[in-house]
Amino acid sequence: MRFKMVFKALFILAVLADIMDYFITQMGFESFSSGLETNQYVRLMMQWVNPYLASTIVFLVTLGLIIGAERLSKGYLNDIPYSGGLRDVGEYLWRGGTIKIRDLIIFASLILYVIFIHMHLSGFLSWLSILT
Image 1 (cartoon, rainbow, N blue to C red):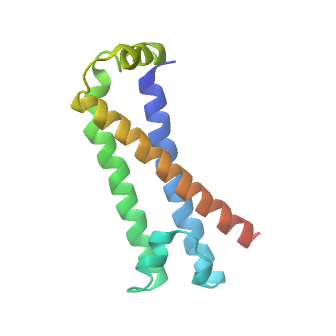
Image 2 (cartoon, helix red, strand yellow):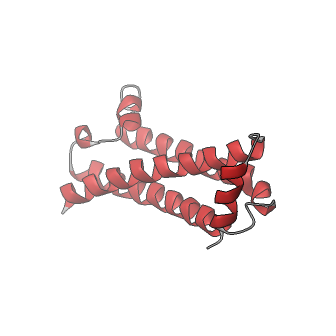
């Protein structure tokens, strides 16, 4: 399996999780109290703005960070070893002597994607359990 495909799949999953969480949160705010929101960043923003706006701000900031991370690492994914398979990347990391900026950017992007996927899928599932 190509490393680039894994990277793109996590990017798409992060975007979809963010969008799904946003829309189900908006539907949840219409039917239930905004106090049921589990996302700590939305709850923090709700101290200063209404829940709908807080959710929209967090959605847009998250989406901007996801897309920004993808744009930043896009050029590095065509470099060796990241243009190869997962095995090539694993061997490069195992044998690598120095850490390059491209390595930090790519893996920071992956970590960001995983954090946002977890955060937004858990938010989506919590609202889904409340709404059904």
